[in-house]
Amino acid sequence: MSATSKGLSHVATDGTAQMVDVSAKADTARMARTTGSIRMERATLDAIVANATPKGDVIGVARLAGIMAAKRTADLIPLCHPLALTDISVRLVPDQELPGIRAEAVVRTVGKTGVEMEALTAVSVALLTIYDMAKAMDRGMVIGEIAVAEKTGGASGAFSRV
Image (cartoon, rainbow, N blue to C red):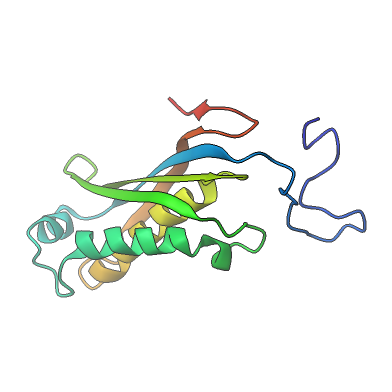
C-alpha cells in the first residue's frame, strides 16, 4: 500500500507531525547521489582553484563540511531518522563554463530508510561553506540546482534523474 493510499506517512491521526515508524521494514543496501552548483565571478573561481583566498583551502574545507553535515542530518531535519552511514563522498569540481563549482555527494547505508536527505544535506552544506569562505571576494555567488540525481534500495526501488 502506498503512502498516499494509507494517508500521509508523517502525519498522525490527530494531524500532528510524527516520525515514521520504520521498524517493520527490512534492512537493504541504500545509496543516494545528489548534485548542485555554485556560480561565481571568474576571478573568485580562479582564486579558489589557485588556493589563494583569504580563508585558505576552500574546496578541502567544503568537502569535509559536506561529509560532516551528512552525519548530522537527523539533528537538522526534524523528522529524519538518525542513520548509521557506511560511506559518504563529496566531490567538488571547478567548472570554468559556469563559472563556479559543481558538487556531488554519494551516501550509502544498510538500513530501513533511505539516505536522500543525508546526500542533499552534504551537497547543500558543502556549497554553503564555499559561499562562506569566498564571500569576502564575491557576495553575488548563487547556489542552486540541488537535486537527487539517483537513488537505489528500499521498497520504492531505483530512481535516476538522467
